[in-house]
Amino acid sequence: MTVQMADYVTYNGRKFTLIDIEMGKSMIGELPGPGPLEERWVCTACWRGYTADYFIIDDCLYVIRSKGGAYDEDRDPADKTISPEMKRLHYTGSCIIAGDDAEEYRISDFLECYLNYEEALELHFTNGVLDEVRNLKDAVKEFREGAEAREYLARRDLKYEYDDRTYRWQER
Image: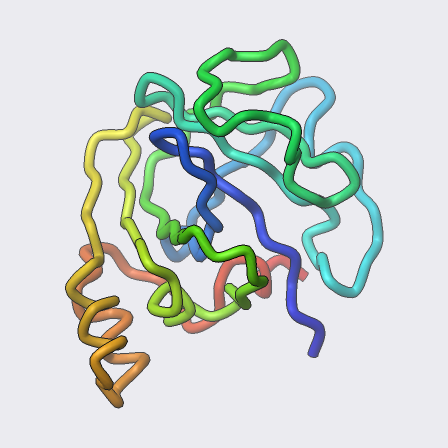
């Protein structure tokens, strides 16, 4: 199977890979006007038909469609400007984001992939407002120290429930 294209979340001046969203939830939902769901393109690496860049600015969640399916590298992650093409989201639920300073590509198609990054966070939103941040550093540290039960370890410190396959594989 083709590895699916990742979405990205900019949070606290850093770009993170969106690993997964809470089971049974949709971050984007139905957006009014032009948005990621209205400009679908077909690609075996993107069953959803779109990719999205998310931004957490002053604890509020925004989304902007990606340019050609890739993260907008021109935008400074520290930029807190809310541009006209950004849409405010009213998502209630959680997600897992992960990132590091390595320039190498990392697969993020499975929940436990967050263990391969230097930093991983579980975020919870209520009506699009960030209200909880959980650092998953203990699971990452234990994995790097040689833990063998990868899937168990990936789920052990999570507060919310996630499917066996990440959201990118579910919308087909």
